[in-house]
Length: 262
Ligand code: DGL
Image 1 (cartoon, helix red, strand yellow):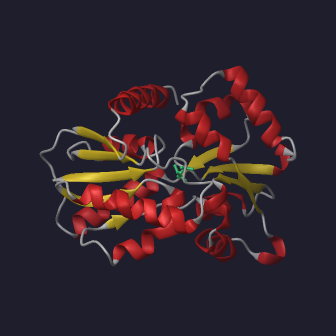
Image 2: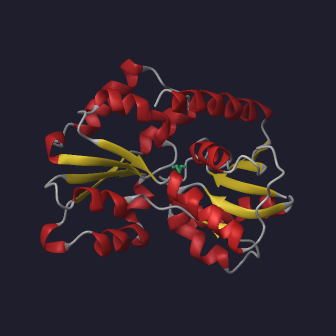
């Protein structure tokens, strides 16, 4: 049986790469909801409906656990889904907690980049108020919806992207920041580029490694971990477009090559 990962599009591939690296003896199904990408600019109700439809399609396959490899979908619907399907569901959230811990005593701030819908959800605002002390709050939030679109277009041209990032980071004095949190699974595609463009003292973190560690313990807890798989990956999308499957394979290869340069 496979572990399924679900995202609106290519972003979840960054979580898949981490899963393959930490759990190479599992097999995977990667599902992209190409009919509805992007999620981050839609309403919570729309995303709830799209995710449920995708999960219905995924559950027709031989699946033992589902990773919602998408911060937006997790914040909109993961909690309800857990009572609707009978396999373990692992969600994700922006890595705000470790970022705050890293900066609490340094006097630096934390910038969380994510989709507009993630940043609007109570799951995010409650997370921030839990970990960020109010009389000295250090977390700022930056919606980057266009970055999802650029990623879906496989736009990795340095000139185009540095214009975009310059514009988006312009309102911030980056000397004040210690950590940038990539709170959308599409964004790690740009990690190496951001590393080049941002001041060196800024750490760039995302939630993939923590999510896969949680997946590992849930597989063990449920005694469903496999030690005989070969990291075989089956790609699926809601629109059944073979050309998008080719794009997923290309994007996955591009991303894993980027990881080797980190
Ligand atoms: N990759 C997703 C996330 O982690 C959603 C991006 C989108 O579809 O807007 O939030």
